[in-house]
Amino acid sequence: MEHGEPFLRLIFYRSENGVEPVREWLKELRREDRKAVGEDIKTAQFGWPLGMPLIRKIEKGIWEVRSNITDGIARTFFTVEKNTMVLLHGFVKKSRETPPNELHTARRRLRNILGG
Image (cartoon, rainbow, N blue to C red; front, side, top):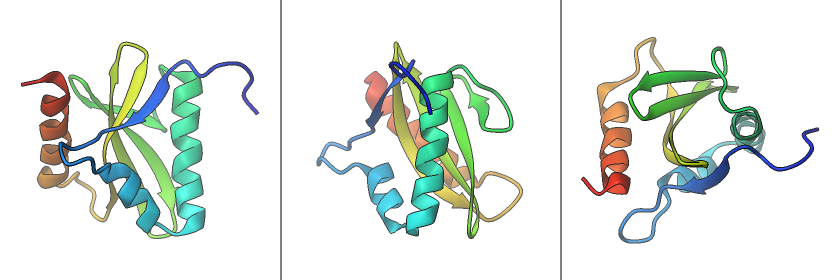
């Protein structure tokens, strides 16, 4: 069990209408899968910066947490702004390549946060 404060504070990306898409996605997962994703995100919070196999940098400003779940591999895209981890987008990966639309969603949300 970790002791002390996490290195990164955690917040969910929130759309203009107040929806937190990653929180909603997590609620749709099975309980044990939600727990697995949560533990991996917590590991990232307390151990930042981390690398493979848990964390992979996708591109400038976007990383992914890679979680093994019942139906395959969950990916949670996030950015780090100062000392805050912002969860941008989550999905269950079905193929070897990251689907372009999933990355596009994370990029769009990151632009919204950055005001661009």
